[in-house]
Length: 515
Length: 122
Image 1: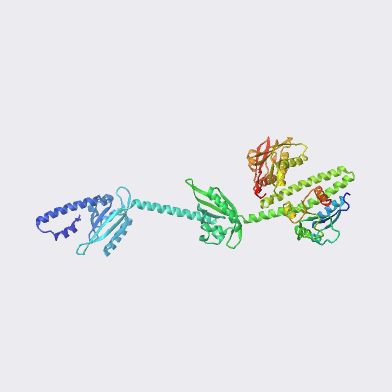
Image 2: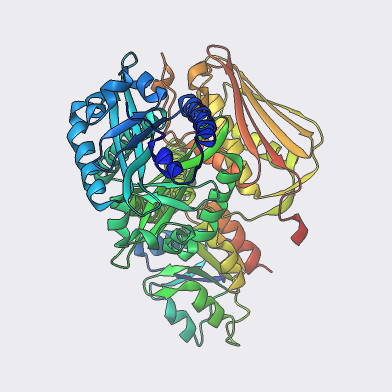
């Protein structure tokens, strides 16, 4: 092996004088060489020296340990044999090129480790010059970057996987027939799918962020912001129907829904969709309009029939035809049933279109209940309607609508208890709420159906329940009326034992301040 | 017949209603005139009715506008008006237009007779 001290030996020859001095100096130099050797061998990186031809003249112990080579094996071009064959030529060529141009050398390669697989390295070297300016070779280092490289490779792989997943996500969201979006926890959009962009005919910059709200119909904005803010604050599911302005300048009804994505117990993102419900809305409006107009139109001939029946009844009575007159009366009662059905259809269309109106006044609650109960007592001979009232005072509400609700509940109680003879109507005041309870001892409601009885068109099905007549609108209308009057409706029921329908009504309605 | 002298006028664009109510009121002893063209009630000069039964929706006319004008004309402003509509939600707007009372279709004939009696016997 060429001595690493050659450079300095050559430099020293010119400055040292007597043999004594020379010997002393040589000893000191030998010590210094050994010291330097110890340092380089102790370094956690490989060190190397080459001559001006690019032949390695020295490698430290670290290199030899990494490669399993003897110091002699690494000399000259021998070091290249430690490199993996794929990297060998590249590293050699790079060194030759840098050497030719006398410029700093940097190359990465993999070493075939003698015992632990592949070692990733970065070798660097700087050209060296003697004091006379002559190029003398390179001094360089070689660092083990295996850990860093593997980490980078891992990261790269993960990134590729992630990119792949993002591409798949975009592919899936791209052809989904809904607008799909994600939002940050402050409510701003940070992603929308292609369908969203197509709908708005916009570039992402015009939708992403807070400006999406500008695409919502001005009349729907306040409600939308309120619902969205509520969900952002509470983490509850977001759901809202609004009109969105498409690229052609038309507003289309959409149903927006979003769920929070929770990680480590914290909401980190919202995933949402806007589903086009415009056609559905148009059809629903047409249906409501039709039902509204149809039931409205039906009322006029019904009024005429009632007038004719009244005259006919009176004429027959006058002529002493009491039996025939009685038949006309019964006919009138059936017309009233028809009237109620028409009324229900009309009410449902009003509820659905938000047009149910209330004429509120102060009235004596118990008196209103008892008058309704007395009217209904005339319609049933089988059932005894028992009133158990406690003082309720006056409430501020729509008396006709409340009577309609009570009528519906008692009519149901009569209808669904054909084999019992008692219905108990109770009133009381609890926590500022007037509460009515109507208890029958009829067929009751199966436990798993109780929650559905207030739904539109729902009719309880069971052994016998479906044999009872009705449109399935009464309880829906009643509960909606009570809801809009600020109250609540609920039912306790045991199948085969009977049902207890109750509703509460705030005594002081929200409009009390105007009085 | 208990009210031989009382004259009731019916303004409704539905011939079925006009015919049926006319028959009922005549049976009850009222003298009845009718029109299916609501605007004609504003041209009344003589033979004034004691009470006007006025439908709210008449083809091309809003009964409330007619009522408002009817109540502004000197010779008719004191004639009681009962407005009729299939929608009970517009009761308030009928009263606001100057109607003395309101009935939602389909109404009980006895309710109609009661109201007519109250207003014509004042």
